[in-house]
Image 1: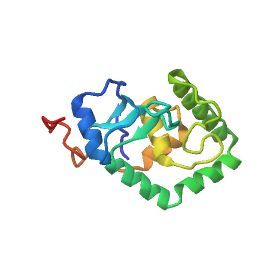
Image 2 (image 1 turned 120 degrees about the vertical axis):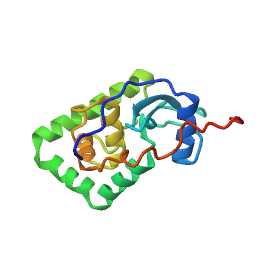
Image 3 (image 1 turned 90 degrees about the horizontal axis):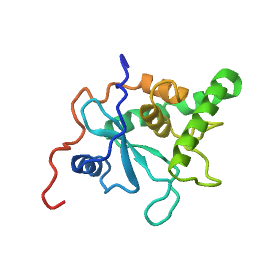
Image 4 (image 1 turned 180 degrees about the horizontal axis):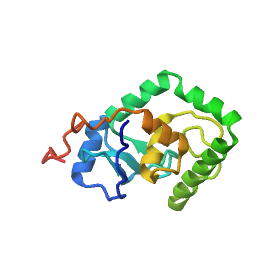
Length: 177
């Protein structure tokens, strides 16, 4: 990617954001707390979710990637073995492993500031392996560059998913909603 998407402020979700989420994922949001990052097109691409869903079910994925174009591009990276390569590097690169552990601690601190989930790991395989690039990219976009080194690396490998315009129309909020 020539330049990663710019950092955006965490915001309360609007009706248009909720509509965009529904269009992006094909379902209503669960545990939605905030828009953690906005795509350069204006739509949410990462949402912040509650550590527990409304029914009390633990949901440790605090930063959930919603943009289907970004998710598809990340899926391609995963299918091409990027997670395995990153996990192998964690075994031999002490500096990278230390930075990834710090990303894990950051993730837990952000989630625990909302609600502590005793006994639940952070997400994405942190701190010892890479299990889900979607989570790492979501964390990097929400927290900003320099917090999650492997999320930052994955973002750098992605195409500029927003260049074709919005993945969904957020402004088409139906009156029945």
